[in-house]
Image 1 (cartoon, rainbow, N blue to C red):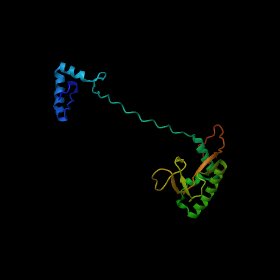
Image 2 (image 1 turned 90 degrees about the vertical axis):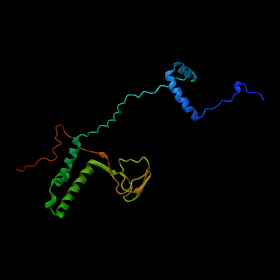
Image 3 (image 1 turned 90 degrees about the horizontal axis):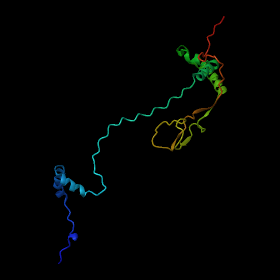
Length: 199
């Protein structure tokens, strides 16, 4: 039987336990023996950059939180104008500012009827109001994904994701048109009702 040629000698694998002292010996000898370190360097595949430990980067400052969108400011004149009309036609401010503890329920009910009629008159003259949902209250409805969360409020046991199935407890209201009168220049809208002096 002929001996195998040198290039045909099967490669002997070094076991894991044998590699442990070998690795430690090579590690420490690389520091103390420059020639040995050069021979180790020739074993690395060409083109492979020597690995360098990553230096810890300087602590990055935390990203600033996005600034909230500025709140939309509405002109106060429109709200004051509405209060003026509700006082003029419904005596709403008089009713709200009055201490009702001295009055009977019947007297309060009679005053509330006047306030109700006046408020209804102001709303019908200056606003077009319609229900958010066209269904009758108490009916069963389904809310699909993407429903308007600003126009529909979920109550009760709200879990999971749309579609939601529930009973319509309130139809909601939305304004579709506003017809407020224009104010003259120099008009003081903060005077909701002028003081009255009888002569």
